[in-house]
Image (cartoon, rainbow, N blue to C red):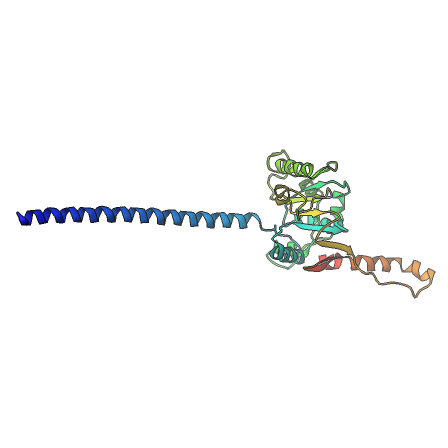
Length: 274
């Protein structure tokens, strides 16, 4: 009798211990799984954020280094040009659309002064040309073909408010992704906004700025200016006329200077390889 009662009591205690232990195990397991999933989701979101907020790769090595240096310091992905910005834009766009890169570029030009025909004569970055060749032997001189101009898509809207600029950026993005054009087989490198007052530092919506790789306007963190040219003071008027070609060559060799608080570099035929 006593042994039966003891066995019954022991069975109840054991059942209670088993039930409690199982509940605790399940609760602990649920908490662990939830924590693991939350951590994984957080890591995935962080990785996605980093993947979508990195600056694009610029085919001009010193420019690419400078953009990444600026990004590490400010977390801003946009290259904001000022000064004589078109000189750098012609080199950049020409290098992007020509072999070996053969990208497509969208441009929203509020100033209406970007001339795509000038891309045919623009000097190209040699870094990009060399990257597309297995050997440096018999390296051809890179050029922009007229067919490459089909992959520069330019929208020239009127100036407007910031919301209008965002609408223009969205419009050309929709066109590049879903429109009928000849660049379907090419990778879309990004969008350039010229004028319009789009300042990635805060005067435009985050959505508009996130879609733009380059802005060019009166305000920017990278300034482009004409480089210093040697003077020709110690000569007569006749000598000056005779040396016009020499002076013009000096101007072309001097090129342009891009400067910023994070560094700078030269832009010209000599640096670009022509």
